[in-house]
Image (cartoon, rainbow, N blue to C red; front, side, top):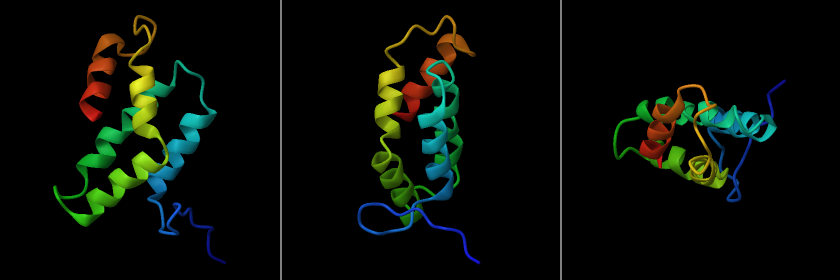
Length: 95
């Protein structure tokens, strides 16, 4: 029996790491979201630069509004976030 596959609005398969991260972000409390979003950095490092795989990852990240989440969480106070302001800097690098 095969697992259900997430698809985007064009019917193309979505990267499972991106899909799982988006689900985790959606279900998490606001103070945990910045740390979760840092996972994007590692995900984006894997494929070669200018590869179709990297382009598809970026499309999936955009499709699930994860860049928008990064921008929104950059507006909060980082004194109570693990990693403090260095977390904010890393998120800004992703954007």
